[in-house]
Length: 240
Image 1 (tube, rainbow, N blue to C red):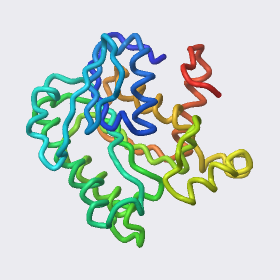
Image 2: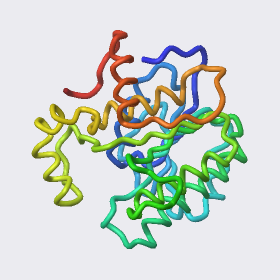
Image 3: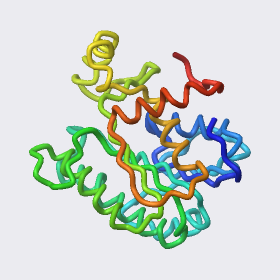
Image 4: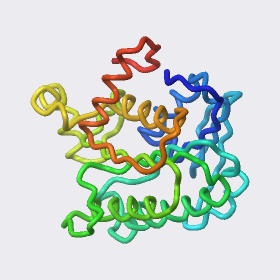
C-alpha cells in the first residue's frame, strides 16, 4: 500500500473495463481511500460502503457530473475502446473528445485533483503517426497537459495482460494471450499485468507529494514502479 497522510476521495472512470475494474477493486481495499466515485455507462453490480456508482450515458457532455466531480482528490481515467471495434470517427470521439470534456468539468470543480490517464504505448503527441490510436491518444495527452492539472500522470502501457480469463476483443489479443508466457520472457518491457498497471495508476494519484507537473510513464517505467512497490510488504488482492 502507498503511505499517505490523508484519506483520499477518488474518481474512477471506466470501472467496468479491465484496468478500471482492477483499479476499483484495489481502491476498495486501500485504507487511504475513503470514498470512490465510479462513473460509467453501466451499473457495476456491486455495493460497498466506500463506493458511489454514478451512471452517465453521454460523455460528450459532462456538465451533469459537476456534483459528482466536486471536491475530489484524485482520478483514474480508463475510459476507452479497442481499435477496430468502432469507426475511426467514434474512436477519436471516445479517445479525445470524451477525455477533453470530462477534464473540463473536473478541472472546474476539483482544481487540485491529481489525474492518472490511461494512454498507450506509441502515443504520438506530434500527430504524425500513421496509427489512428497513436494520434488520438497523443492528442488527448496534449489536451490534458494544457488543462492546468497540478499533477498529471500519463501511463503508456504496451500489451496489457488480462490476468483473469475474459472474451478477447480481437484475434490479435487472443494470439497475444496464447503466447504470453514466451512473449513475457522474450520481451519483458513490452508487457504489463492489468492488475499491476491499475495499482500503480491508483498509487501515484493518491500519494501525498509536493511535486507538481506532468509525468509520462512508458511500459518500462511502469514495470520499474511495480517492482519498487513490491519490495514493500503488502497484500496482493489479485491472483498471480
